[in-house]
Image (cartoon, rainbow, N blue to C red):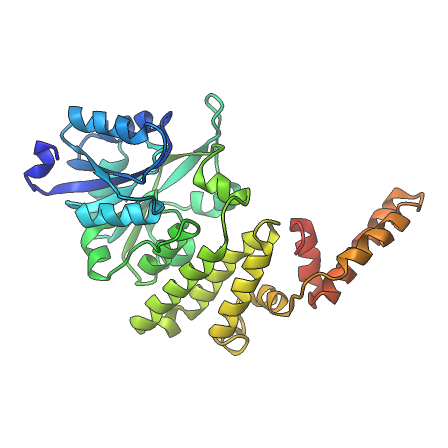
Length: 370
């Protein structure tokens, strides 16, 4: 351990960086953190047992700069567990998470910490941009248009207003430790699990107007692998059940029931349209609904139609009949009429497999279909 860290002196912000196969990017990430001015910091690099030189590069930084510490894990456990290890070791009043292929812009930590101490906030959030990996191409997330348009100030209900990512925020370390909040032991959905538990406790949350975080979209990342179906979806149920137990154990389930139901809908919905995930995602969500009082407990929930469709869904026996009828429709000479008839055929097939709600069935067609 470096002399600066071995002294045990407290710092203002601890930055936790899980390391896994990011050799081309880790240098830029660490440089951007160490270049932060106006705040005392430490950088906790947690090696998640990758197969390239990412950890070796972090070790070189630790040898040159006393603010960097490399923590090696015995086995690969995912970024969530790596962050948990970082929180256990953190000496900062607040901590931030930065992914090993992303970077932060000048002033991110100083302004966040200054806002936190001035307001007494448990968390300070800042906005981000996406780096597309081709030169200077940056983009704003279309899905975060409303969030990006918010002015600086307090967030009354951050649970529904702040993106599910672990990055883009600083958290009060004592708040997280005192309430036993941790990332689930999952490689899929772990960000959402931590986010839900932390913000379900109504922490004082302040939003900055600036975009300080740069999120890199790249092939080969964990999130890219999840989108392509390179892993299982069973982690989603684990994340949802852990969040449910968290609310029950603290006696706030009734206060946060609607938010939890919206959370599991948002957590599962994207995976219902991915061929590699579909079967297990439907099965896991159906079981979760039955275990938590569906449908009575869910009346009025924003995702109620989705949950009804999943509850009623059966294996698509009609697929064997769909394609012969579809080929017959190809004989119709008018393209527009042919398209409408094929759409009606697919909707009818979906409804006969348990999709009783035509509106949702049509929506599922647009998104790729169950």
